[in-house]
Length: 343
Image 1 (cartoon, helix red, strand yellow):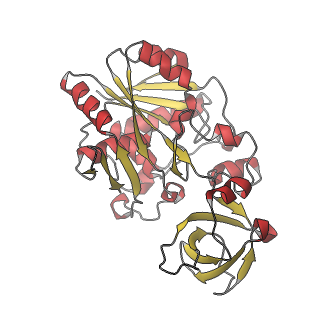
Image 2 (image 1 turned 135 degrees about the horizontal axis):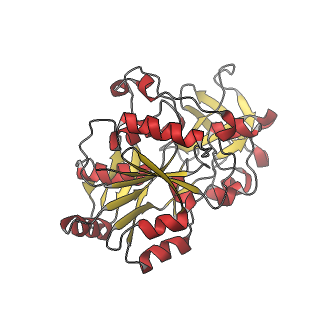
C-alpha cells in the first residue's frame, strides 16, 4: 500500500486538546454512517458477544531537564557493572558532544555516552520509579502539545490520559479508544450479557513515529509486548465457536488478538499467549479474530489508519472521515470514537 493513499486534510480546530463528555460515536456500516452516544453504543452490543480491552498503564517518563530540555526515558540498559546506571532516552542532542552533561531535577546528572535514536546516557545515581512519580510527566502525543501551544501536561491529564482500568505499567501512549468508557460502562455491558475480556499490550514509542517510506511494506514496524491471559483466550475461542462477534476496543486490542491468531505470540508457562509483535495490518489482511472495531480517528499516513482501512476498505474510510470532519467530530487521542462493522 502506498502511504500517500492514507492522506487526508482536516481543520486544525478539530484536533482535540482535551476530552469532552459525553463522547460522540460515528457508527460505520458499509457506506451508512450514523451518530450515537456511548450509552446508545452500549445498548447496540448484543448479549453473548465479547468486548476485549487493554489494561496497560501509561508510564510517567517525560522529564524536563535544564533549559527546559525534554528527555523521554525509554528503559534501563542492562549492565554487569554494579556502579553503572545507563538508560536509553530520546531528546534533542544534535548540537551536543559525547560526554556532555545535563542537569536533571533533584540533583541528578545525565551524561551523553552514545548518540542515535534512541541515545544512551549514564546517570549519576540509580533512578527508581519513585523518582519518575515525583518529577516526570505523561508522554502526551506531540500533536496535542502543538495544538495547545505548550509542552507541559495539565494536572487533569493524569486522569484524562489513563484508562479507567489501567493496571499494568508499561505504555508510552494510552489505548485511547478506551478513554471513552468508565468502569460503570463495563459493568453495564456485563449486566447485559456482554463478556468483557482483558489483555495487555504495552504501547511503544513507535506509535508517535511517522511513516517515512513511500510503500507501507517497507516501513519497519515497531515491536510491542503483548500478553493474553489463558482465560481470555479460552473465552474467545468459545465465543467464536458459537458464532458470537468479537469487539476489539482499540487498535492495541486488535493487533494483540490478530498477533495470537497469526502465531506471532508464544504460549507461556501458565497457558497465556505472550511475546513481542510487529504485526502491520493494511488492506488485504486476512482477519481471523476481530469482527467489530472501536477506535478513535487517526492521523493521516499512519499505520493506525492503515489498520482501519484493512478492517473496512480504503474508500469507506475516506468517506467516513470526510463525513466525520464535515460533522465536526473531534480527532485523535482526545477525540471522538468510531465503530466499524465488517460485512
